[in-house]
Image (tube, rainbow, N blue to C red; front, side, top):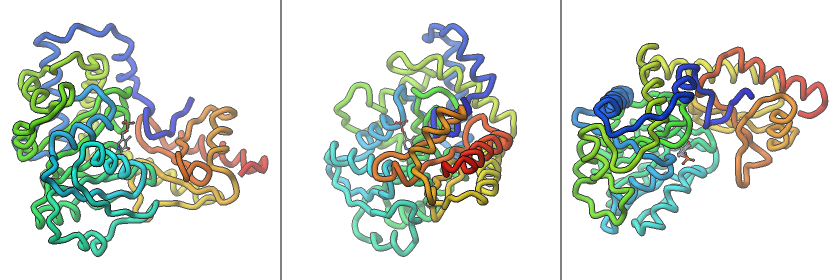
Length: 357
Ligand SMILES: *Cc1c(COP(=O)(O)O)cnc(C)c1O
């Protein structure tokens, strides 16, 4: 199968090879060294400020979103949540579950966040901001620098869910002033799902170390303390962390974060150029590089997904909820090439010739 979803995505041969090996015991100096190398490369690729740390969590990224909300905010906060799709909605629900006072800046599907909209919330006593930099459900990229400036001005604790934006869209954690950056193993990092990273700037490290968290597994102070020696409090997804090491090294050897971002951007541009002749519309006003949401003008989006899966050996990414019939998404992350784009376009053209588009 050719996989154009937004995760899990296609892995490189090197990452697959590590996946075929025996999983080693992990309370060893060798595994600690690998974890500390993973941390260094993550900090470098995130352009994290001096003194930042990484929590490697064995959970999908929603677990890390939840851990961040639990460790970084309390009932004394007043948080602003940017909600333009299903991942913004997830942050909203997490604030509800953990009883964090919050307001929601709601955007329509595909709508970009303007400075005017954002500054309606200026000087209103907000203490924190939660945003999904690429709202993957609609492929909208929010401006991390604009949001960072707003947070600096209002002295807000700034949390960026970069799960699908990390290594797909430019992101400079030190420059934009993000306190927390969350990402996961199965998006641009193109490893199997199961591990998620929380990068914490010094201010966030202080905050989690002084938090009073009612959770054993999601206690980030405990995670960071163990990580000082390259370890985790509990058994991590050892195999995936070894694949992650192969992948991080692969990115480093191919020119680092900026080169990978350029590669994803070129993959997206190639697809968007090639698809323009077909009966589709783009959905996002401010498109992120990682994924293109597409609205079919004449056909049902979910039926296109099923047809490509069953008759062409191709996975695209269906949308859920009220966008199920109207929008499908095509990912540009993972081990994909421009020739793979051509294969997908040819399949769509074949469907069109058969009257299925
Ligand atoms: C994929 C993704 C997540 C995490 O989803 P999981 O299913 O928990 O891995 C969170 N936020 C964004 C923006 C995502 O794209």
